[in-house]
Picture: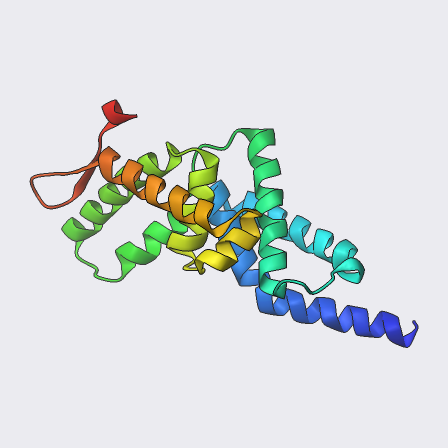
Length: 183
């Protein structure tokens, strides 16, 4: 192997090691399926491998890779018509923190309601919620990943939050209920 080939292999290894978790989490949030998320993550890094020589470094590497992940997830969504994206793994981590059975059931029920409300959002709003709300990326990073203007991210995020707020109503115990009529 030539020295340039070794440098490329080292760079790919470094990128995978650094960004695998971010890509996997994004795919898991989007698909709500571990197996699909693993497959999509592998597909993303295959695309990164192919595109790396032409990467012009005009954006951050993380932004570039998450853009590829976003496009790959959308393609998957279009192929499979996915309707859920909050993973059961996320629920399990939340429930495991306290250990009280009543609280565990309440949290699981609330997340089920939130999941239904989130999945009712159009994919563009869902992407903004995942990237800005869940992954806590900046408006600028989110705009770069979604290939749109920062003002669109602000507007879509505001509208998505409003739709979620309208769809989720408080119950008598202080939890939330998904109002299916509002959708």
